[in-house]
Length: 317
Image 1 (cartoon, rainbow, N blue to C red):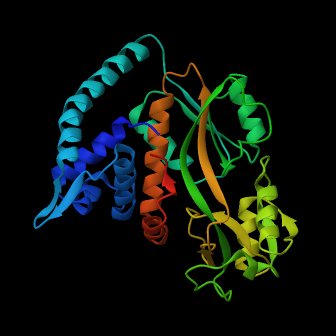
Image 2 (cartoon, rainbow, N blue to C red):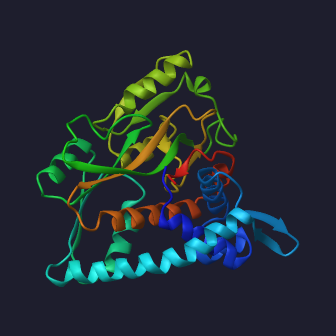
């Protein structure tokens, strides 16, 4: 992992605010999520950047070094970005054609793109098929692929050549159950305790079902999959107590359903952005997508709290 400009902005925000809590309020993110990001930056740089004092946090010697460089680099890079944006957009109109599978990030990404480029068209092609989205980007009919994959898998099963990829964030996979299910009030549940359940899944091109079956085998059972249907129907089956389903920890609130963490996080899901290697806006789109994810986490207090104890998940720093 390499140090990026957003890491320097995070460090400066904490130093300016005098505490992680105040910095989180300024940045509009959850305090636990910001604390997790800071720990990752500190691991990357090899030591603590702040220590607690009577009036908040104070920079360490390493923190002072990082801050002195950051306060020069941030305005310089921002100026470069502004000048480059003017040059790139002067002779052509930006456009953002996004292909997306069912996921939590796309709405926030579209909103941010529309605000940043009010005169540029933003469109979304939505489908469950990662392979379809990848092919459309490769063929030039879409500009970006916002898709997901298992912990070590790739998006879909097709050739990914010609595209650049970035992992935006990693979610644990939880289980979605009816609010009256015996495990609904639990802080977590082991996969083996769900051996007798009927499972409902949404379609997809990747290896997720195989990875789930392998996790169940390690837990000592074979899952029963009597249902496969779109995401909306999945929620309906869960809330009528006819099945349970796997879900991302950032799953939207569903009346009558509860998302419960799986003990040991045996499955995870990577949110990924793919683009043609010549795209001039890719890094900006990735930044907006990450910001959209952090906003979602901020609206999921249970997940935000869970992340403080599981720093391997959340945004990829």
